[in-house]
Image (cartoon, helix red, strand yellow):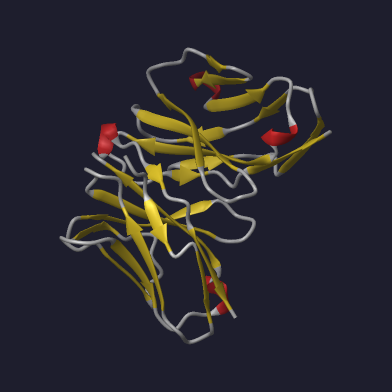
Length: 114
Length: 115
């Protein structure tokens, strides 16, 4: 079965702290794709990153970085020096080679306080 | 290049009424997906359509819900005889391909409130 688990329901940090959001996935497929989306209070879904299962290189984009580890089936997301504008719900999602749907985790609410 | 468009953005219905949600995919996209986000929950897949065909409706409730994607015009998600439990955000996504090139672009969502 395809499944995504985001065990952290809610995280609160103070501005400028680093924060890591965990994502653990399950899939039988050898070719699959992992995503992170941000949902700010306004409600839209903002695409952050897509990763395929053959590329385990970690990625950094500004204050955002992603750690993909197939050995532990994890695709964790770190925000460095968090800002109030980072406050949102963050979703991890999975699809597979011939999949036609995204399977989402339950989301992690991130609250960044000034 | 306009993104995925959904309308209305907010929809209020009384119990027993019908709700029609529209989704216009990105230009050149022929694959449409509908997801539902219940309050305090993640998004759940409902249905996947290509032009004039329903490909996968494994996430659709068995009753009252239907979807179409006609040859011309937007995709429509229709909910008949709405109940309070249908209150949710409904997101549409579109893609140019499926499978390995499945990159879905999301619309802003329609927030349905059932009174």
